[in-house]
Image (tube, rainbow, N blue to C red; front, top):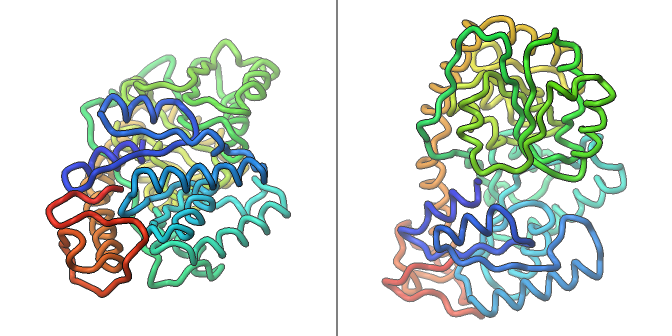
Amino acid sequence: MHLLDLANGMRSDFDPSVAVGEEGFLSRACRDRRIPVHIIPSLKRSHHPAGDLVAFIQICRLLRQIKPDLVHIHTFKAGIIGRAACWWLRVPSVYTMHAWLWDTDAVSGVSGVLGRAFERVAAHLCERIITVSEAGEKILRELRIGASENTVTIRNGIPDCPSRAIHAAKECPVIVMVARFMPPKRQQFLLRAFAAQPVGPRLRFIGDGATRPAAERLACQLGIANRVEFLGERSDVPRLLADSDIFVLASAMEMLPISILEAMRAGLPVIASDVGGIREAVIHGVTGLLVEEQSVTELAHALRLLVQDAGLRARVGAAGRQNFLKRFQFSPMAECTQKLYWEVLNERYGPHAVEFRVEMHSGVQPLVEPARSGESPSV
């Protein structure tokens, strides 16, 4: 959703294209909006040296084909290979760090060491690193990844929508979690906390992924399968959030998750692990409840408080909605990102290559041909 909103929102000043590793929601949504989509078949989540080399070659081939003026790269795997390809072809790139798992128990010690090493090298291959929270910028600074002058925090933001939760006394409040099924998201902690609740509330999971079968088995083992729904990937998340009463995210690590912003937008009270940059969005006791990471007991207690008190749900949800309107709307994020794009373009291509909107700096000419004055740069 972040990438879709960004590509769609930049079309007034830029000519965006999107490259992904597989067909799915994002590729379909981009085509629906007539945003060009390119599939890179070898770009997979799993690590495979031969496959990653092929992905590097495929990305280089795509860059030579579409000749972008700027590349904005997201997620770790694409971030490493994509930045290397852009550096190789002298195409300026910007990288957004959405998560940092290397110093958590979500990855092995060896993977953590390698991940930090790759990030440290790749930081020198791009023009800017965007962190979506101050917590992310702190991590980069402490680990000395990238130059401080090339790192900027731009908090996530999303467009508003009319779907709102209605809080009233209910026999069966609906608890919802929106996240991919993967180890760092820890759906199993929510299942165990939910199993400790009295019969009545229902639990919904929105999302899909590798750990979903294990979560479904655990629901059966805990004897709560008849009260838990696994909805898979959905395109109607705003409506499903509006039909819910409590939002939960039990992750091991997050920077500033879009799902929490969507929940606040809908006016839902949020329960979340107190990790990463979550406390930059969730104000404990005001817009939601923060719980200790991995504490099923704390999570169960927070659930019980909100399940039993519709008035509390309404007050906390309304405060979250106001916090979203004040700090996490799409326009400020898009404006900051656009400004960053123009700064990088200006530094690289100089004042005659594009129609600049920021102070001019000298730059070097790339191997690819930049957009001419009056044209929209391609991103």
